[in-house]
Length: 298
Image (cartoon, rainbow, N blue to C red; front, side):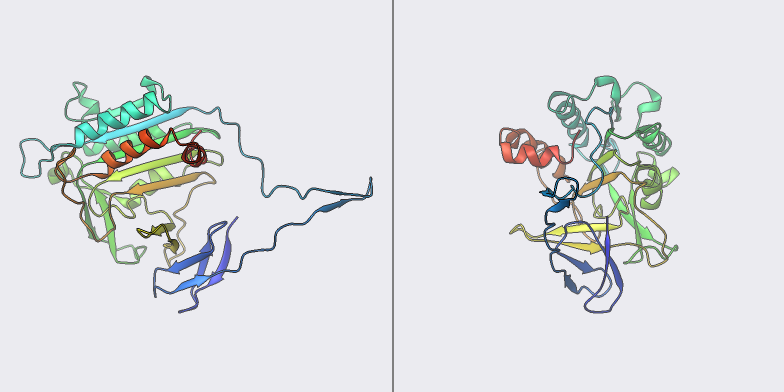
């Protein structure tokens, strides 16, 4: 359930995610605070003349027994001027994490790297497209889906009018110099909009300019002190970029106007995958963090 509030600066209508105390306008930058709703009180039971607990908000969550599927893409661009050294290792680490910690079946994961002998699992533009469509094919309530990309990202001019900054974010497949890049509009149409109620998608985009690579309607911006604010990134054209009732969550390596930091830990350019895997492995021993993860995993 979302509620509409007017921006305190430019008065643009903003859609507030459930439970968020404030939201930042992506047009004027103003932060609009919203008063917390009053706690629901007890509900009278006329049959017994007693006070019954208030009903829980919204429908009950689906049973946590759905299928698990993942697409993992790591591109090193070997023997080219774009070469990266750690992206394939990132992909292998993510696969190990999903199979050992989150019990994803081996046959439910598609790996796209240059090391694959199957020509359909080389990370070309066509193969990445087909893998994204496979991930959502037959998706049902209770399913848990993962899309992980480690490679180059870029930007290009948007002519559709649905980007606040006027730029589309892109992923660079192995053959991007001849076949072109994969634009965020297509990623959104393939992975986000078909997601049905009760299904969840987690995306980890370890690339430059990846802040809104999935074109989600809302962005959560968090400071180093843990403070966060929601930004409304819905297109002013009114085109819906959200799901069909499911939950899509994306972790990005950097903002749209940034490039990923250098490191020699795992890859020359990309560190999000390494940090993410390390944090999950360490924190799964912490009960509070495990409860947080369970909110987003089936």
